[in-house]
Every structure is written in structure tokens, then in C-alpha cells.
Image 1 (cartoon, helix red, strand yellow):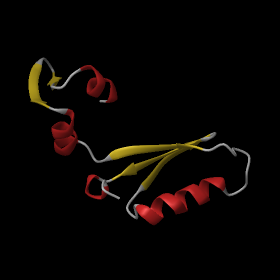
Image 2 (cartoon, helix red, strand yellow):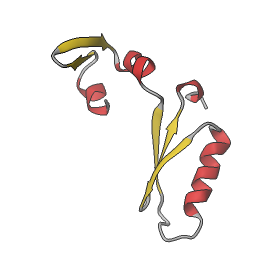
Image 3 (cartoon, one colour):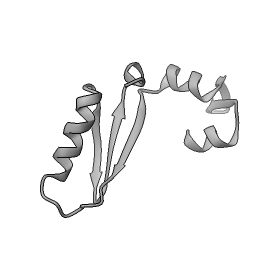
Length: 86
């Protein structure tokens, strides 16, 4: 979806050769998406407790944030649409 955001202002979704939906990326994200992905890259990869500290800070501002992945220095969270202003 990120590539489509950059390349075009209208996106079409096809399935099995049939057009299913057309709209802006925001419209499609609201129709089919579950939120935004927020990725943090930590400088202190080897620091003990770094992952928990980042999660605590993110959930302080967006309580319904969901921790998706934590690989090396990169940690990703899903932020619900309803809390995007936070």
C-alpha cells in the first residue's frame, strides 16, 4: 500500500480478474485496513530493556497500540485509525 500511496492518487484492487474497489489510499485504508504501522529504530540495540521501554512510551500516548514485531534494532507497532491524532 505504501508504494501505491507514492505512485498514484487512486488505487484499484482486483481479485481473480475482477475489480473489487477503487479509491484513494485513505479511503481504502478505512475500508479494509486496520490502522497505521509505526516503526521505531533503536540506536541502543544491545541495551537491556530497550524494547519494553519503547513499548511503554508508545502505549503511553496510544494505549491501544499493538506490538507487531521486534527484530534487531527495529520495532513496529500497529496504531488504530481512531487514535491517529494521538
